[in-house]
Length: 118
Image (cartoon, rainbow, N blue to C red):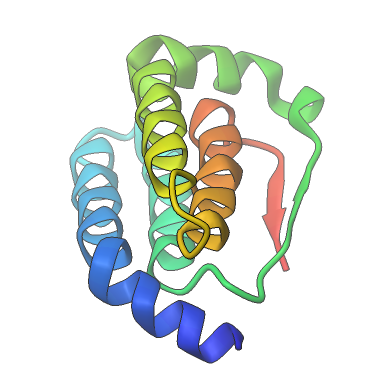
């Protein structure tokens, strides 16, 4: 089931969101100060392409300052976007698994530092 979910996710949502995160990571990596933020974007881009079957452990308190900077420079907007996408996916019964993935991404989009993808 996770293979089918990953294929559908990739075709409907994952390709574009993964590319967007990869591009955002490249933009962040232009400066030396932005490299940690770019690395987080690349980690999230990989998760965006194939999210089903992967779990995320979160310890957001480990890097509180970096998470606050992330929130200021776009994390809040990304989180709200994923929350809205999750709500739209959950309108139908078939879209509920995709909505749950969007809610997982909303949490990561708000504070990605300290999160580990398994």
